Amino acid sequence: PVGESVRIARVYNSDAELLRYLDKLGIRLGKIVTVVEKAPFKGPLSIRVGAQRKAAVRTLGIHVAGDIMVAPISSSLST
Image (cartoon, rainbow, N blue to C red):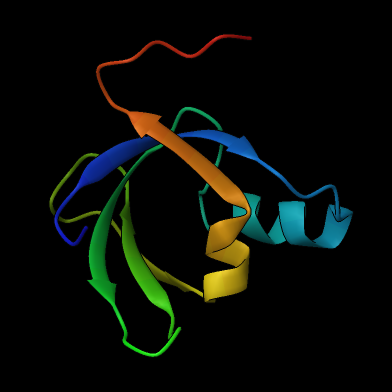
């Protein structure tokens, strides 16, 4: 939901180009992101990357966002 903060837990995609792109955007395992906006009709998802309110906002297509598994901030990540 919009306004929810979560931690990136896993990316279900092995495409090297996509993984480099996500890394360039700062979207990495363990990173906290907050949903800023979700456009209707399978539109893009805007997320704030980082825990600070002034962190960069990035936009992801719904298919790319669907490849990213998130977890509640309070849960620990298993390696």
